[in-house]
Length: 286
Ligand code: A3P
Image (cartoon, rainbow, N blue to C red):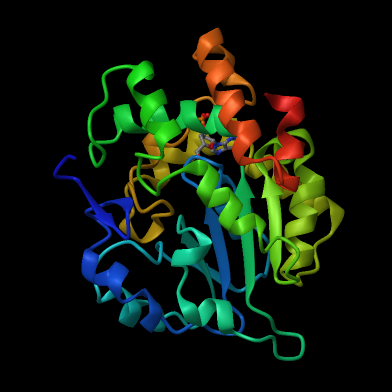
């Protein structure tokens, strides 16, 4: 294990998530109107965050990830006045107690948006992140990374465990599941789902405007302007947005997986995801 990583409850974390903070997650105080933006790394978190930021008159403020930094994080999170949008890559089991227990009050309800992406593309995207991100250990080859990914020996642990932990709660009325692939296929439809879930009224032309502003090309071209603002960190593994916009495509895995790797992966996928409803959705993409 490298010096940039440590283990907490059996799961690998970056040292930018201090042990003290991880140990104290249960002391986080959720608000009735909080929105959590949850995902396994490389599932499209920056994309959905940008969609939310572009909703007109939404009165929402994007905060840094809940698991980034030290114990002062909870005091900092209290200082936000507007409705908070809090990103996190935590699995359901590690999510602060207080978030799970918050009950809805009348119209207000704490909301959780879970973003999921097909695991082969997620693995390839993660491989590049490991290679390019100085906050992650260096990795030599795709083969090496493939094995780590399958074993769950990567930051935030196994993709399978993460998705399954959230899948159990997918029918909760305050959880919205958004998939990367559906978002690619029909951005406007999925942006509408998000605004409706957040209880915000948006016109069709506003939706189209959001879709345009959050297209891959547009976001990639704007990274230079927005780069390295520590207050605009969405993934606890970096605040450097240049590392995020790589290819933005569905199906890039085909350029990396050998036929043997595909077979091994599919076997594990079938075994782990046999009861998963979400997994059915990936059938078309893998
Ligand atoms: P690739 O590495 O496959 O290109 P996250 O935001 O969770 O870190 O996920 C990053 C992945 O989402 C990267 O995938 C990135 O290119 C892709 N992505 C970011 N913004 C996107 C957008 N507007 N449209 C499509 N993909 C996007």
